[in-house]
Image 1 (cartoon, rainbow, N blue to C red):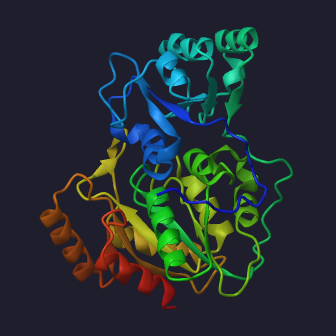
Image 2: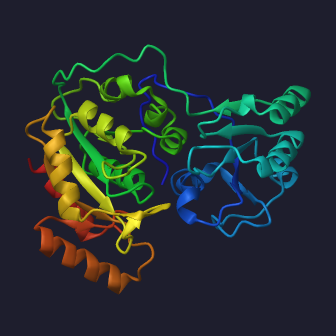
Length: 348
């Protein structure tokens, strides 16, 4: 399922591969999305997984110590967790140091810089290993202009975080390319950048330059070329709405696809805040998106139905499509429903 995409020269990083995926002490699968994303979209680079004893989340890969992973060819440990605030937990330090001592570089998509963690810096210096931070935006990002750019753009947006915006963008870009449409996936988060080999970590960009970074991520292109842009956050998230709005204004999408997980009725980690209805999510994204692209429209709905069996998934997808008058699909399940979603995205 690996997808090679142009990196535009943005945050392009030569990463040591293959990887050992570190799951830390994760007990919530949604916070291990980096590990799952690499497993699903770059499986040939994933040797195994490594976690603390208290972890209950698994990526389903061989469970290896860092020394065992190095013996099997791994050359880096990737922190596969994306926790609230992007912090490196103190109880991870011993495990990460063990990986360094076993000969592995450390790759992190956290907000916290690896080199600022004194024990890790000391271990890396002593053993000649690299500490590689992915969440570093390029220098010289301009302030957004709002200038209309050539080419076509699709942005995945969501009712919450960690429910499938990246998977949807990757799946749609692949489906478009399978039809012979010129289409590129544009990574806006740490996991997408690791998969694609380039992009901009939008949530690490200073707020005044957020929309400018989105313009830089998706520049002028041929009239029939599609940039499929990975969404971040949610307009409805009390903590992460800013990155979603910056992406919406700066990417100037012609089409949005709204992502949701059926059954998730509150914002992940913020139980006091309900998730919006799909109708609300469509309306607000279109209202705000018209500021930079008056012709914006909703191409359809992407539902993450991984927790449902096939029959229930189909029932929910069909009911959602009838209710909204838009195609609804689970892009990972694929099939005719995904074909209908792609048709709708291309139809404008």
